[in-house]
Length: 238
Image (cartoon, rainbow, N blue to C red; front, side, top):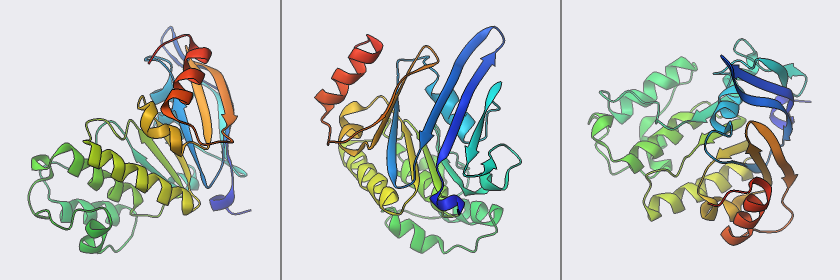
C-alpha cells in the first residue's frame, strides 16, 4: 500500500508539558479523501495534537503510523505533510515569488510562482512586495500555496479561517473540498463550527486532553447540528 492511500493512525498518544498533561491516551484514525474536523474548548489539546501530527511536537507516549511507517521528525513520510498554522509561516520581508521559490527549493521542487499564485487567487498582487504588507486573507492564501507546493498527501490546518472575511472563508471552504477530492487526508482544527459543519466527513472532539468523540459523519451537518453534538459532548457552549 502506498502512503498516499494509507490511513493515519494514532495509538494512545499523550503529551506532557512539565506537570501539565495536554493529551492523554488519544487513539484515532484519519482517512484519505476525507475532511476531519477537530473541535474542543480552549486548552483541550487540539493544537498540540495537530503539532504532533505535523511531527513538530514529539509525543510523550504512544505512536503515530501512516500505513506501515512510524511517523516522526526523521521519517521519510514527513516530507509529504503540508501544515498551515495560526501564523502563515512566510518570510515577511520577502515577496510572494521569493517565498514560493525558497520553499520550493527546500523540497527540491522547481516552481512557477506565477501559476501558483493564480491557483490561489493572488494573480493580482504585487509579487515583489514584502509579504508583511499583504492583508491577513492574502497571507492565508499564500500560506496554502506554500503548503501545497510539494503536493502533500496530508494537509493540516490550525484555525485556517481566523481573521478571514466572508469571501476569504468561502474561498477556503472551496479549497478544502478540492483537497478532499484530490484524495488527501485533510485535518482541520477550528472554532468556526458554521464554516466546517457542511464540509465535515469525520468528527473528533477533545475534552481536557482526552478523546471525547471520534466518529464518521454520515449526513451533511449544519452549524446547529454541530453545536448540538459539541455541547452534548463537552458540556460547553460555543
